[in-house]
Amino acid sequence: MSKTLRTRAFTLIELLVVIAIIAILAAILFPVFAQAKMAAKKASSISNTKQIILASMMYLGDFDDRFHAIRQIIPMPPPKWAFGSQDMLQPYIKSMDLFKDPGDGVQRNDCDASYGYPLSYSWTHYRSDDTNLVFGLHAYNHPTWTQAQMRTSLSQSEVGSPASTINMYPMWFGGSVSEGYAYYRWYTIEIGGKSTGGNNIGLPVWPQGYSVAWCTGWNTIMSIGAYNGSVVWGFADGHVAAMARARVMDPTWDVSPTGAANNVGKKNLLHYSEIYK
Image (cartoon, helix red, strand yellow):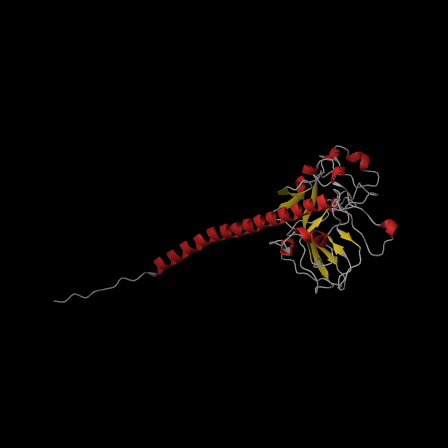
């Protein structure tokens, strides 16, 4: 007598259980993969910042201990009309791709995209006539200014505590392709989180953005780049650190025209004076 072999198949319930288990595992693992990807980009951003900040230190050695400018106005061949910080540091950097932060996905709408490359980093702005609002290290110059109006960056010897003074930060801006023109913030306090009026948080941290009009007439995003709230900062002594923007400057910083006296002793890692460390 022959026996009939029967192949046992999965029941519908068993299939549903397997699918449910796979879905649960995917829900657990996908965020882990996303975090690992974010951590890798952050590590790359730290590396980029470190190499650029070291280039700026080499620049100091060749230019009488004075920090480079954000933008300088000198005769340039077309189509370039300004000399940006990336141009000043180019002799010390092998690859200009370092200026593109791996997490910066902001679409560029530059006036002249035929030249240059995305710039994801900028430098704190210094202006000697308004050190309550503009207290960074690097000068910014405009082509319409007279020679008497041209600014000069600070020297390293003028920085009270270089190891506690930030001078480089991630600026993600839709207009920062070329010319060293738009990838900085005029008022340094906005990098620290306050506006000139003191009524809002100034320049937002990614993924939040500040909508501005660029020369194309389009609105574009301006933001401090961050990885889960952690911003990568470069310091005047050459080291790099990742920390929340809230740790950079005292939130009670007085931005009023007469507020300088009220800020003595308040923490401000963006300021060059050691009395704010």
